[in-house]
Length: 165
Length: 82
Image 1 (tube, rainbow over the protein chains, first blue to last red):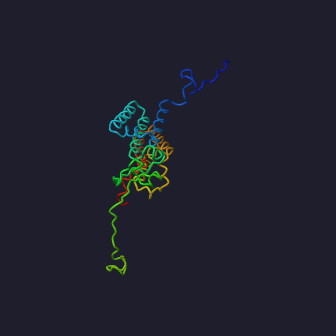
Image 2: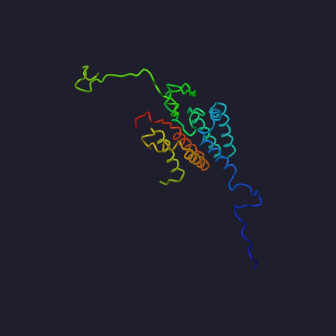
Image 3: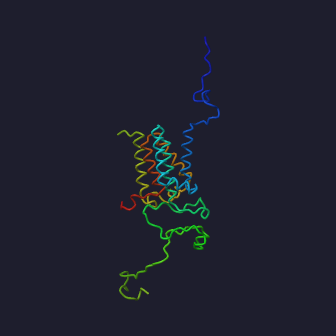
């Protein structure tokens, strides 16, 4: 009668893997790091965002995602695409370095392609006092050509000058 | 009709793409819209995309579109009367 030996560990710290290895795959750790970089894209320096949003950076990042997909690890490819889109989205928001806190992202990407009437001026001496104090960006402010129209046909006094003064 | 997990996930993701294409303040409120600014919410959304891509790349594509519509506030259908 033979006594069965101890059951070998399944998936544990086998001798084929060094002990200092993390308990999960390195490629998944890298994938998580890429996703984290994409999630915090608005806190990165603007130079990095502009690089990824530039045609060259956009192209090479997309090629890197394609290569990862070709190598059979699709999650890393999607993580790269996620980071790329987050970088591009964050680069659309104008945040002046040092003047507006990086944690405050003002507004979202406007999909209607409405241009800003007043460009954001990072020079604090050329900004309005309220903008300097509150740290606002004067985007979308229209300061001239205010049009007013008289009320017509809304009351019994319509057509007269009685209610339009 | 037998609905498997893949079909259900596809239907859910297509619904999310349509919902996030609408105007943000009417279909799902401003709370979820504000949550799109939070880095933790973005990280969770990104990991959801990655996890679905590991399950099926097509589901990853749908999830990536839905997440991007949510975060970048792309309102493709908001200009049309529904």
